[in-house]
Image (cartoon, rainbow, N blue to C red; front, side, top):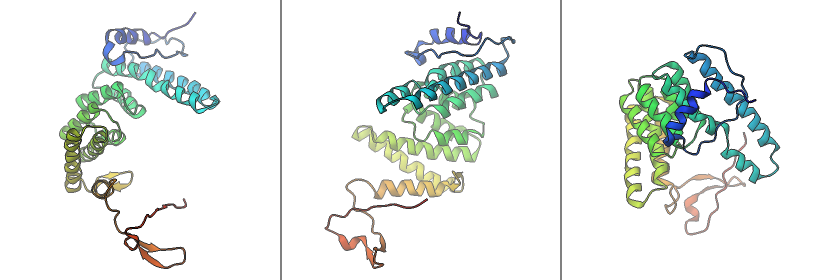
Length: 270
């Protein structure tokens, strides 16, 4: 007889009602025995969810390592346990709104998922209930490559409403990067609008948040690099002139080869 933790019972009920965010979700395989605690014990409920993920991930990783080919590995990536358990973390966060328990659950979803409606739900709840939390700076950084329009809305809300300058800066930068990525998949008119806002946000970051750090580097350098790439390194643009030495130590400029087919090979040692 399969034992189901009491924490899953209300969660499954909520998932059945909320058909929108969880349509098509696969129920996770449970390994943890039922806990004997108070039903309203949020700390132990959260620990149960975390243990479920840890157990499911260990089993999934074993299957991934045992996969015999790329096709099998790709199939397993679709069934990553984070995708299966994210709905339960969201149910938990809604059950304990505006608490640190909800923060842990929502930040877990934001860190684990790279796209999809569950990620959008988590970002919207973070922007609504936790916009004053300074820890959002790291969350915003992790969201810069998420392709969802809903993530854009959440980042915009955080950038506008957070009382913390570092959160405002990272949210603005990540929103700009995210809009630029979305532009690559949009129609011509929509792409132009998205790219215009991307440039505005990078300039805003340079003006107001230049010294805020991301990965040990000031946002000014990140924004400058993003703008330079956008304005100078697109397909069809002339390559910027560079200077260097060939293998014989003879100085040259890239412009010396104008009109000729040139292959640039960038490499290094770490």
